[in-house]
Length: 185
Image (cartoon, rainbow, N blue to C red; front, top):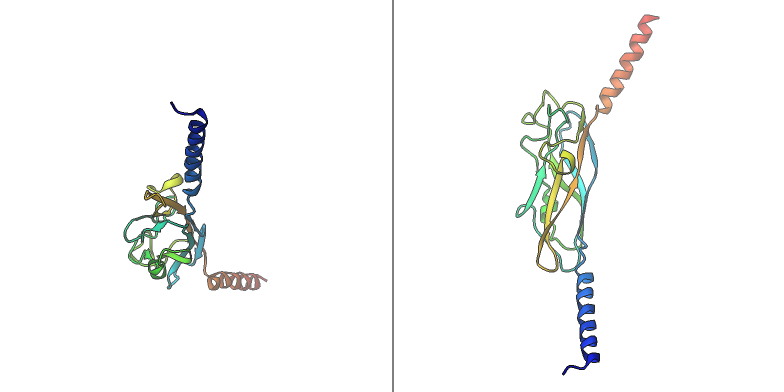
């Protein structure tokens, strides 16, 4: 016959172990991207999609070349998008050892003739649409990790690219307006 005090004590100890096990398995993995990155129609460099990835104790980061998903950005009317050659993971992010926190460029985009809608440059506007993307058809990046219990999990963050007139173009438009105004006088 089992003493009631021992049975209650054993059940209390088991419950505390279960609850503390749940508390220690809370995920610390955090992944965020800069919501909107601005560029110009003919920007010749790399458009860096910046973000932060933070790993918790006991979590294992899976390199994006092993497991990841990317939904590239398009204009809402699906008339232009960053889908040509040169859209790739940033080399610095790929070189990260997966420990602690990484902050910097995560994904790179290029303006080139292979992009949908390219015509001597990218059309102006906000590229915040992907017909297959998560969260209401938005461009996004999904990264994977293994939690302390050995379960593969993922985290998804959205982003957009805003193509705005180059500063030189805006200045020239302003100067042209002044010249037109002077000729009318």
